[in-house]
Image (cartoon, rainbow, N blue to C red; front, side, top):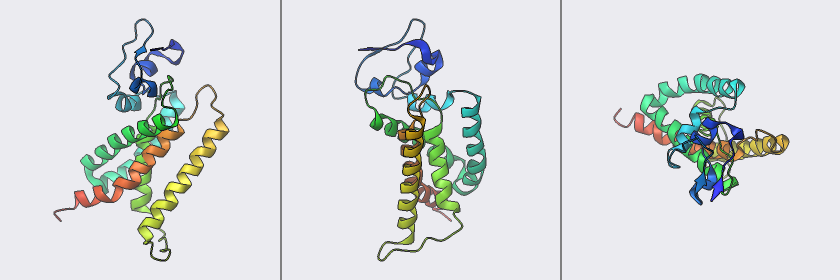
Length: 191
């Protein structure tokens, strides 16, 4: 059993994704109700660590999301967002399965949106490498670049007061790469 302390804020503890909740019983501070662990990857997207955190996620959602919605439709975009949130939580869990610190923010879901945008709206073609088709090369290159960037950001942040959820960014991005084309085909399956 892990007892959570209330320094992160009531909303972060109650609605944030806490990796340790999958393995042990958590005890919240007096007056905080913990949501079911299976719901917290989604509710964590509604809680942010300040105005700048929220603004950056919203800018990316508006910029990339509006074009994705035209391509994937509203249902496809919402599905991508939700799967990205859960994939982000899985990635965050993989980086620290016993962590009692709540993960908040829509970064996993936004990373999925960003990855799908990069897959569907890239303007420069990527050449095939031998027998490896250009689509696969693009996916591998984008995934590798994103993972390296996120690891560098995580290293640079040094795990300060508000550490970056690197695993969430990586998990969401990989989900976006994996779902971009299937969701596009799903949207236009009868066309």
